[in-house]
Length: 369
Image (cartoon, rainbow, N blue to C red):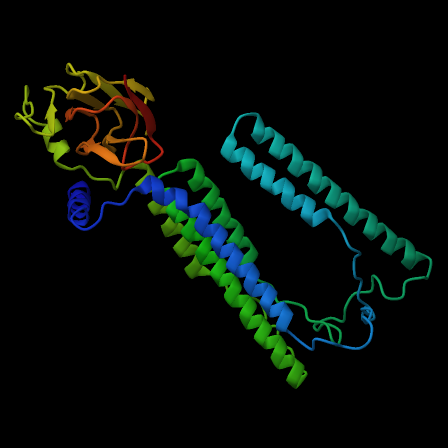
């Protein structure tokens, strides 16, 4: 039932647009870079236009309020961010890079922890010697000192971390899951920006009234958690092909024994899905991947290509693209386990790329010598 509805939706949408998922996924990093650039430009503009542009003839040194301990400048957060980057890179690249990224992250976190312990030790030493003036004393209970803004507790850092975790997982899964991973980051980041804007407005109001309302304990973000759960569920279903559908190739593949394509037709099927029929080229899909990523086909003459889909309940097809990325052939969808034979028109000599349009991570090279 679900496969039939999905197949109908795909066939209906193909009348208007047939997206090239591989090219759309390749544009996601460019879109992310553009959003980051716009955000940084906006932050730079806000800082440039905030407050008085001139406070006097010289820079005023910052004064720490009494009872507040301000830690000194540190490179530890930057180093930890670099360590996190190498860990994500290692997760995507795999192999030895995963262990290298993990080692770099552990080293940077240990450096940060050692620096904090040393700072804490200096505070205790100063207090024991009676030299503590504006350092380690706790703030008054229930309210921050005058002139100090303490942001209220928030779930947003946790939610954004979950969003990036979903994004990294979707990069590994590939296909449509990457779109849902990007959507998870966008939803959580927009929520954080919304809270930050509301907090900034409350701070401006406190400057006028002298009263800063921290808002109390935050409510559990049930709606955001539900949205993330739906996104993760849809990503898993689509990447696994459970919600995928089949086109006419499915019915052809499950046809009567001995069924074959009519002259000039696009597909034909074998009698038993487990037995691969005679074909010039055979491509096997298993575990949402091509078993062989390098194929050879005759040049300048039509040929047959057998698709052996061994993934139960998962739809696959084969599309052939030339060196410029233009699609020169696309076969019908077939839901496994099943075998379908495509009649491919003559291809000029050269190298081509074959890909499953449902799972763009399934790519290979077809050579026509």
